[in-house]
Image (cartoon, rainbow, N blue to C red):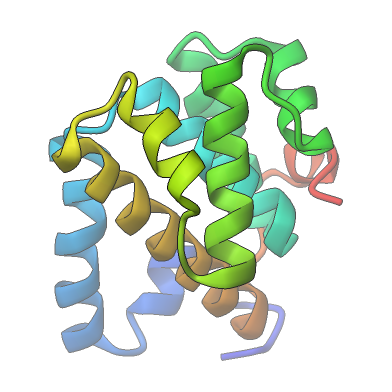
Length: 156
């Protein structure tokens, strides 16, 4: 699985059909049925991809973030660990806290709660966790983006 022919997520997951079926159901929920606003979802995923140095996630979610109205300046801010406003900063800080300590501080939970209800904050936590897991898997299995040019643009 860790050979050069492992070139994308689905071909990698195909090595374990039962796992793929269960995981993809959860992942599709986060992408299509989650209560989290899509723009916030994409900012969070980009921050996870950057922190975990997941070129595959980064390449796919830069495109998806742009489709949700995220600008190049906002994408660059995600890489620096900055939000362009207080709420975006809470999203970035939330990802960092979850990645470092596996929990949100009371302050970040409350700040996110200014715009997100409890279900949305739960979806936020599960989205961050899901994409951290994917980054671990993609990095371990050597999954590379289909188009290297986007990936090279700054996961690090």
